[in-house]
View 1: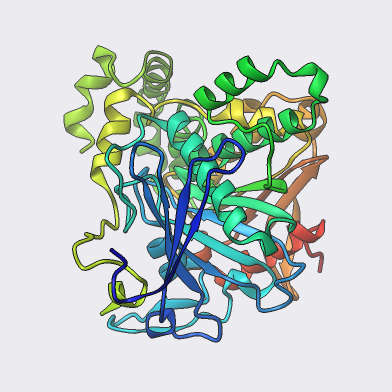
View 2: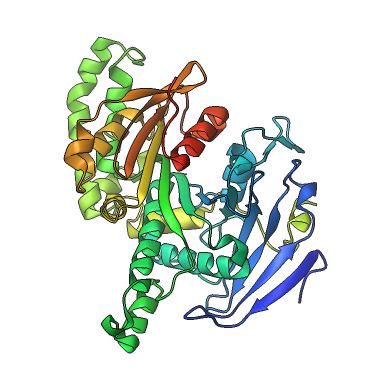
Length: 429
């Protein structure tokens, strides 16, 4: 039954190796997002055995939606709602007012020069739902790839645009894993037919979330304050707290902590290789502990800003500790553009650890050259906004005075950063 608050429902038959699906659109997102571009919200429901219903919110570019790129934003967690944190808190065209109850226009929304897509994923996050939560990052990435292919079938006018995947925090895993899945499908699509055993190829792709044909024009990925490799990044907390002009603790405290920091790094390596189920890591567990209607959501659909079901499942199977640098390396080797940016006041995914990651933790053909590039300043007008360096497809950038949610802390600077990088360079003075 189509809810009374939906404008329309469109049904799509099976397409290539996609299951049949339907598109249900909401009717009045302007009642939620007070901006010049309120956007299009709705659900894509897949007849895929899991009865998946994925909620999305699309904001077209304010510049030229017919030619401007499309950006997919993925919030972290795992299990955080992208439509809420990305769309209504950080980088959408409107933001929830500080006193709550209504939204105000965001003058630095990322849809200034790109169409921006927010999706609550995986199922059980935000308004998205299904019979079962995907079992880990690989399965979730395959289902998200399926959603994107369905989305571009439903919105064919956007399918030829350059496409970028962006995310923050656990987005350091979401983004490169999804990017690699799409990149592999694009490579498959470019193979001549005589290289493909059709029957075995189809079975392999269905098992791995790949597609023989791809309608996704992926150009690159951006990872902001991303969790990519815990064993490298968590150890950066000591450097952030105890070195440089902004150190947080005095020298005597830091001298006391130094040997503990080294032991911590050794333990983190064990957790990364053996997973959270190892005895050492388990011991630490106890220590670490009318809008819906406008968007086209049925009254009986609950909203989860953060799905602890997803977070707990990822923890149980060990995916919280799995590194995603292999996906980043794959994209770099395939010459997809990669931007890794970080707020220099972030404690969790801190700049010290991100510098260590890009200089030592990523292994790709340009690594020796990238490693020895010097960081140079980039600017917002005459004012220094951060530092950056680049070699071939990889760019690393820091944002001055931004924390873990850089687009929230420094909205103007992050918009300049993203627009400039897409166009090919960062602004000099």
